[in-house]
Amino acid sequence: MRQWGPESAERVLDLHEKKPLPSVVGFGLGGDERAAPAAAFAGVYTRARALGLKTAVHAGEWAGPDSLEQALDALRPDRVDHGIAAAASEDLTERLADERTTLCVAPSGNVATGAVKSLAEHPLPRLIAAGVRVALSADDPLLFATTTANEFRRVEETFGLGEDALRRLAENSWRAAFRPKRQRDAGAAALSAWNPPGRQLSGSSS
Image: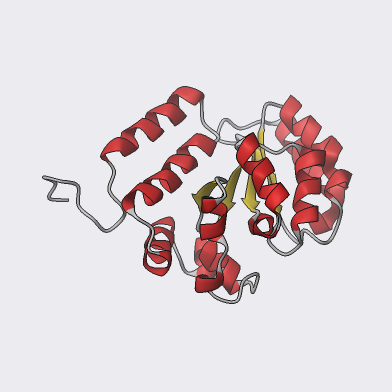
């Protein structure tokens, strides 16, 4: 949690280094992104990568595009949680698109926390139109009473996204997964036969 400071984050890595678990594959920084500058955690992220962990960072939900840019520069994360503030900066969306940085966007969670006023006002369509690699996330399913499948349904209904756009969102999730490349590629390739949630595949009875 960002508000607990880098010392707390170091202790998390101490525990992992002392007794690493095969199921632990990544390190992420959550919490109030306004509580401490991303640069304060630069050493933590360098250490996490040295321990073989993939990295993510919660940024660009509450704070503006400058804070997201600082997180990208200081932490060099493999992916970003939220990142919706990027829609306010053409330069930043161009950078994200060029660097193929995945934003794991949680529309219902963003509405629930007040980061956006309503789902209809969510910048998801603008991020997609700018060529940013976006994946859908439920964020905290219990807290926000949603699932990833529900997020697909909601953005389809709210923004009128077609099947190709929905498939790309799912493919982006595979591309950004903290899994070996062969598994990511296989998952993305399987989407050629995928239909949006709630629809049956041709010839399928389940």
